[in-house]
Amino acid sequence: MIIKEIDRWGPQKFACIVTDNARNMVKTRRLVLQRFPHMVDVRCMMHAFSTTMASVMGHKYATGLITRAQKLVTFFRASHQPLALLKKLAGNMGIKRMLITSNKTRFTSVHASLESVVRLQSALQEIARQQASLLSKEALNIINDDMFFVRLKQICRLLEPFSLVIAAVQAARTTLADVMRYWLHLAKSVTGSSSDCLPPAFKAHCFVAYNLRHQEMVSPLCKLALFLHPLYRDVVSNDKKNWVEVQMTAGNMWKLGYKYSKQQVQQLMEDIKRYKIHEEPYDCMPVDGEVATLKLYWKVILSTGSNLELPKLAVLLLDIKPHAADPEKTVSLMGWYHSARRSKLLSATTTAMTTVKMHYQTVKDRWAIVSGNINSCMCTAMHCVLAPPEHLYKIHNLQVHFPSEIVLHLLQGCEASEDC
Image 1 (cartoon, rainbow, N blue to C red):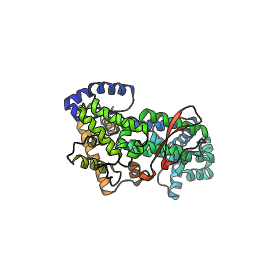
Image 2 (tube, helix red, strand yellow):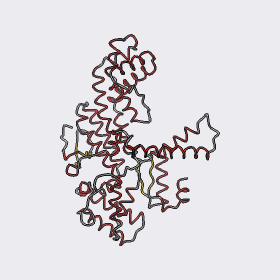
Image 3 (cartoon, rainbow, N blue to C red):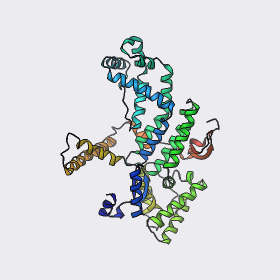
Image 4 (tube, rainbow, N blue to C red):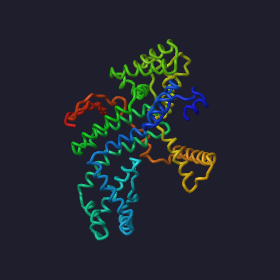
């Protein structure tokens, strides 16, 4: 069906295919790329970060805490009198948000659920002191366990960057370069102070989970995209292995994928070398790291009229959305319209209803951004602001206490000690 649609609209209008890593999707990607070799294979990074978060939460230390927290949430949401008392006490303490349930398939909801329990700790303990008879024995034991809340706070600090990154990668303006920055941001979380108080076994598990997913999900194309971000070109090119990989990836795209001539491939290689050493016209820097600014940066260079190949490649990569969140939202919305109760809707009717809904949702989101009515925390997540160029990430090959070579990306050039 995908191949049929590509043939219908014209292969030249499609530059990449983005899917998750389910078996049927892996086979689909292989068939599409065999038919259209110019298309770029991109993994859905929303799923990549979600599976990384799930891997981190898969350790028995984390699952035990999550299970106890969910039991507490389930008890209160199923009990009218304790829930009413909790709302009253929380209101008196100035706490507006109540307990949140989690969804097994949405791992960010698990973090939100744990945060809601931590946020209501004082109110829950007050109920245990005043009205212990309203609580079940299991719920009372959980609330009276002070170490439970201490450990839960530690888990929340560890999982918070994962939730922010999963929200950020779904933004419309996210690029492959941002994906690499988000991986570095998670590496800082796993190796930084947020994991210092965790048990050694669980911390080692987090190292393994992160690096396995990082090696599985990060492709040379992502490194090329980060290299084409002017603020990060030196970070990538200073490592010999990454520098060779970037050149090979760009050359293969132009030679094997798009079938450009030998002269054009040679021009691309020359452009990459000139870009690396900040030679004109690549000597200027964008005002900030915004995607709109980056696109404008490369389009201005492209409009100079010179026979440059690198700007064409940069504009192509900046236009790739590294996630399949939008189609999934659309299909989910269609499933909500065409439900078991409304199973007689024609496919054309369902499509029309979904189109109208998605159109007005897009207009609403744009208006929220223009008018400033958007959560500041979400803005921070979307931009995922990192350190300035003089304090960028450095890449180190490290060996830790379990038998696996890992690559940990550290902030501000800090080297990890063997004790981590």
